[in-house]
Length: 299
Image: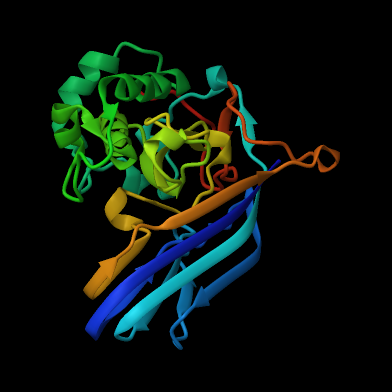
């Protein structure tokens, strides 16, 4: 099991009209990820509303901030007991056999134009075994072809833009990998967390985007940017692309400071708690899909 202490601090300057905020900074509660010692602190005298999306499990906090400084602090203790699987035994699932929950993640979306990449994806990956190995090959291809470079993309950059520019940040790597997977009828979704294990040379700790692909009977983790240790990824939210799970969506005139994030991995071998490390197993933080059938190779 992995145990992470998480601290997220956000600061904004709100103009005289006030502003509405929707935050997705609460760690998700999943079958394999549990959250305890959770605390939210606000410097303004407002009462936030916190809701969980029943379809995704994403936890959203919304509030109305008055003029002036708004500071938001979130802390939690997160335990992650990953489901592990042999990658060689994870097939793709034919579209006709996918569970309903996977349907939104086989279609094109705002930042993942999979409908424009079909021929390209088939040329590059169509001859590979239809399973975890092919998804891993897509991940490795994106990791090799795209260079990680901060401040090289914008909130409008899409998968096609990244394919052409061959440069970007974690969200760009993830959008491109997702678009290529969907072009091959492999459900893939955009997942947010923190960049545990990232090289300090890349900058201070930050929010992180990675990919979950549906294989066999559940969603498995892939980090196309290769900047984090997948075993240390704390899930906040999942969606079709970045538009669904921004850590903060703001309606009003606001100036934002960069987020300040601290993640500390704890170790207690007597309780089976180990430090995050790279491994060869396929990792998932989801439960067995209740609506899936026996896994079948895609046709």
